[in-house]
Image (cartoon, rainbow, N blue to C red):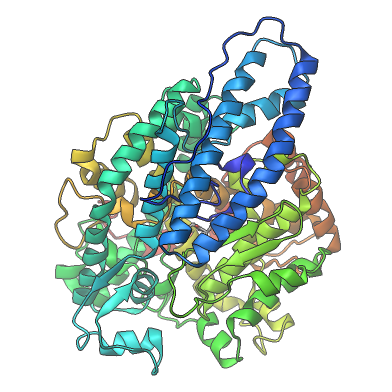
Length: 634
Ligand code: X8Z
Ligand code: ZN
């Protein structure tokens, strides 16, 4: 499975990672056995340059074909597209592993920084490497394809009559409600909307139970990919993943812990306040004040972002001043119009409009009558202009943010399209995830007024309620963003074994997020498998980094326009200067160590939590006061 610097699509199963999808069928692809090159005798810098040229030419062609296969598979999952995707993924993994091994013959040759970086990326771009022994790459590709499809085509069964109202709310009056089968993306929508603790617990439990069916495949995937990582010289896959940040794996882990300790006080205050609000709504039985919060009450299947329960968590008793969910519906926005609005923000900064093919080829809403990967992703199929998003958009605030997120990937991809293919990627993967989010931070009431979504911006007295809505998404996410990989690092290192997959998961969930499951979980289950990126093999620390970085980018942009007001009210909509400077960072792609890119836009070389802390300062002051008499913690 390939990703990062070698990916063509971001956030796609398989296409973030060209090689993730696999079929459980079909004859293995025929490819020559890989040869491990350990003879460095006589290799020169010129040889290295010629080798890199060959690899890049090969990848340009191979990635385009792989992306198109992955696209068809992700937008039409069936036996045949799984078969094709798995076959192709196996071939690409073999090719990439062969190149990575061959690159080792230049380990001791003195090279320019660019060449050295490209050779390093040949290894680091393989998210889940296969060992070179016969059959391993194909087995891995089949497993990862099956995991992807099993997740995306997953469903649960409920009593249709009991959920009639909820199902018609998400399917509309014409939707068929009779069968009681709730599909994966519908379980997400239900967790957002339902407020009945018994129904929440049922949907939550059934989805997490469904995930247990992916456990054996996952455990086998870990075995094979770890063998592959060892052949490439890493202790395990976790170490490989932590090596992509221009520092050692240990330094990177320490860096993420440092960032977490900077922002943890924000989370602790938010947790304390939200738990008290839930206690008021649901009472001591469902939401006691002295225990971790029940994970199904937070408006999200994974308790990762809590913005959907802003109706429950109110500031000073005030209602929601700007209810974007309602406004988008009232103003007659449909999914395409939402994407158009997102594009307009980027063009206001001076970026060119998206190509016509974006509109012709993207999947913006869920097609009827066929299985697709609903999890949102952004694609660049030809490493040039064939940009697309793939979403199952519903009209509302959450997907409006996700659209900006995905478009951020597309505009980044286009900005670095003239880089050599091995440098076509984010400065690090956190940058890639932060671009669109940074733009979305600029969706302030003042901006909504500018684009005609609201008539008058609310007074400053309503800032706290707006900040609360943001905190429920941005701050609540921080520990989740950290633990998904802390968990997988432990699995790859053998510290959490399949018999204890759930024990390991819930230990971290409780320790970092302060949440608990609504029902008793089997220790040997696989609840983490119910989160897209786990069966999808998509590394997750990138999203933690992005939560920090997006505020750094945003603050830098606001400084550039000379903003002196409260940070959360700044919108840089329409600033060509910010656009030009942002583009200068984006067009570097992955060609330089990430601190260079960060410095180009923000003037600093450190990832740092002080911008997110500054943004939420007014809310934190409020929360500290409100929580003063409370027993916080769990
Ligand atoms: O997976 C995504 C994007 C695609 S890269 C929609 N995100 C993470 C998630 O959904 O878990 C964005 C925020 C975190
Ligand atoms: Zn993304």
